[in-house]
Length: 274
Picture 1 (spheres, helix red, strand yellow):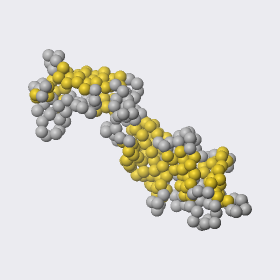
Picture 2: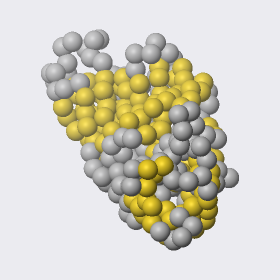
Picture 3: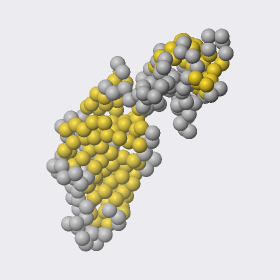
Picture 4: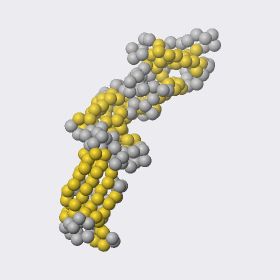
């Protein structure tokens, strides 16, 4: 009995599916969870369905092989066929790059045609690269400045006929927190850098999408406050009380909490240009 696919869901569930086309008179199946050598049986279960869910796992730490056997009306089990071995993804963030490596998916008869590398952005996974089935490592050099918190990656293995896919566990990578602050902005009609605001990376995001700590205040040369916000996406448009401010330098004061548990306190000058 061949396992069709073993795939990971939510980092704590492995789903195993198999095809019963050649075993139409079989009502029950024996699903075995084995150690990575495939010899020792850790757990087993009899089911009359065509899938099995192994829940409450730490997929990043626990790695198992799954097999399925038929059980006939005399309660005799069939031979062990193809196995299911989900991928285990690991990684690190070094030199401003994400280094990913994973175990090969085991074992479709024709192997893996390609792997998709995906990253989560605003709660949705998107594919950033595709590599051949013979490759089990990837270096992502993109800084992903549109992602404000940690980087969350996963790998998807795709079979040669593209009909079967298996998903790996998810991993989170965190680099050194930083805040890029422009030294000038131009609030005119050309839409080029029209507002002043920082671009943070690896900052401490709360579940509601806001920062654990963030504030930005702008002062004119007389020390008068012309703008203040606690929302990182709300930049200063160069106005005060509904009127355009003069083209000159303004003092900014920005405080923001990083994932490295450091509160970054930034002060400087920004030039307003029109």
